[in-house]
Amino acid sequence: MTTPAKTTIIDTDLDRIAEAPGRIVVLIAKDGKLNAGAKRVNKLTRGALARMVDGGALDEMKSGDVKSLAWPAGLKAEAVDVLCIASRASAIEARKAGAALGKLLGKKGMIVLAASQASPVELMQGIALRAYEFTARKTGDQKTLGDVTMMVKDASDVEPLADAARAIVEGTFFTRDLVNEPANHLTTTEFANRIKDMEGLGLKVTILEEDKLEALGMGCLLSVGQGSASPTKVAVMEWMGGKDGDAPLALVGKGVVFDTGGISLKPASGMEDMTMDMGGAGVVAGVMRTLALRRAKANVVGLVGLVENMPSDRATRPGDVVTSMKGDTVEVINTDAEGRLVLADVMWYAQETYKPCAMIDLATLTGAIIVGLGHENAGVFSNDDDLCGAFLKAAEAEGEGAWRMPMGQAYDDELKSQIADMKNVGGRPAGSITAAQFLKRFVQEGIPWIHLDIAGVASVKSDTAYAPKGATGWGVMALNRLVADMAEGD
Image 1 (cartoon, rainbow, N blue to C red):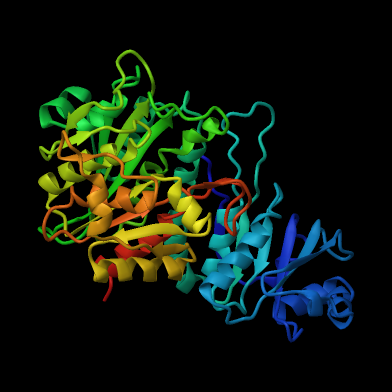
Image 2 (image 1 turned 180 degrees about the vertical axis):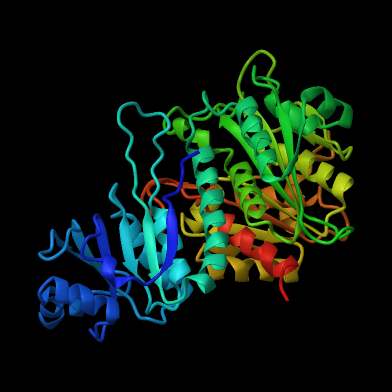
């Protein structure tokens, strides 16, 4: 996987500044007052920072903006980066400001003079999150990044928090790499192998193969992949770091490694983007990696259905009727509405096997959610106000956009079928809501549940606050915080 930049927390040592290569970052608030680190840099550069402040440069800057002084006299550094940020900036402000610095990180590294900053870990995390580039399928010299050294007031106090932040970054990078991978490299087998490799982190991983899935009666899931030469699989990840006997939180992800639409073939234009249709499974895998790396004191199981949706002489046809693990029958009206078929069986298996305290599924499920919410927010559907509120609070705290959508019987009625228990699609209106209503039919009585439609946020065409264009890793931070809030709070 893409390796995050190495980040180190040390006590402030201003004597290192003069000889340091790479970039030196000083933090200055809008009032223009120079802290101890900035004063040392100002002295070494013969007053350059003071002249910059007196010249009104800060007047044009907003919080998180950066101005760079290239090849400053008096230093060996290639640049001094002046970051405009208040000393007591919020965690999200600090993280976004760090992301602005992450864009600048080069092979000679960066020293950040953060002793005055109340949120140095968030600043560090933002740098690491943004310093990402997917280069696994490129040849030639690969871009290398130097170390990030955070000089803080008391490193011993900051370091434990930094470890948790590093785990989040690594989990996010794991998700981004999975979502960015081309489908001929990230097959269902390769995806399962990468998950299996996480046993080295302490996760218990089980891969359910097609014969087991058939024995379990997962007819909905298997119907999606029967047109592909790639075998359908379910990967199960268990992290039991909480109290013995406590019911786990279940995370369920849609892992369609490529979606042609099947017999209901998608248009050619833009179909190359369907390598990201395993985004839900990618987020689940990234969250489980983060929990294992930070040794979370929580019980969580992650389950992902891995499948490829292809047209062939064996593929499911529109009008076919398939039987779910639950036992309900589904009339397949549109084979391009396959994600809900994947999730239905995996969700049922999760509940039957683990009796979870709550369940959250994630999927790049509908284009309709993009029409409704664009690329700023994931759609949130839930049967439980408390669980939904807790997730929305966690997402807001992490700066990951999420918006609750309605549900109701009128939407559910759109799924009525004349020949089966239900159809896999309703009409054209409210497509993301009827998809959620379909999934709700596979939620057992008394199980708090959230469905996250991440079609608009999993992979985007322009840079975001924390990532370059492409896979974002949306959801790893919010779900990690939700786990912490639910199971690890005081």
